[in-house]
Structures are given as structure tokens and as C-alpha cells.
Length: 106
Image (tube, rainbow, N blue to C red; front, side):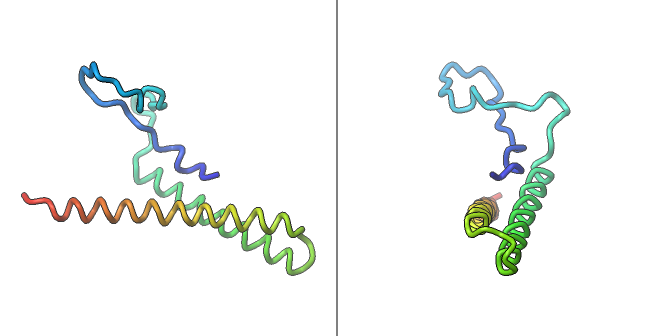
């Protein structure tokens, strides 16, 4: 649903780790020099969210004109709601991380 978030890859910890928890062992890691930066991935996720919201709005307008089915409208609105909730959750995590960093003593 949110294709832009898929561009963010987890990288396994650096160093010798005998206590592998398996959390990152199956994560896809980008090839050397072939990964997108966090800012690019976040930008793509935001633009995908906006595209989803615009698509839901267009389907709703088509339904008002009588050109779209109720099921199509419900699917589009639910998809837009999920995308918006994910974007708000990501924003909240970023703000929380920023506040934690700003509270650190130097």
C-alpha cells in the first residue's frame, strides 16, 4: 500500500555479533552505493501519500457525478485513511526522535 516506505532498508549491525536475534537477518540490504538516502525515501513516501489522497478525492468526485461505484469510493477512502495514518505515525516518530536528541546533554 505504501510503496515509498519499502525503499527504507534495515542494515545489520556492524561488527561480530554472536547473539543474532534474527530481527535483521532477513532484511534486504541495498548494494554498495545503490541505496537511497533517508531524505529521498521520506520524500517518496510523502509524495506517494499525497498521490493516494488525491486519487481518493478524484474517485469521490466521480462518485458524486455518478461515474464511480460505492465500493470503489470505500476502497479509495480506506486506502487514503491508511496512508494518512502511516504518514502521521512517521511524523510523530520523527518529532519524538528530534525532541530526544535536543534533550541530550553535550
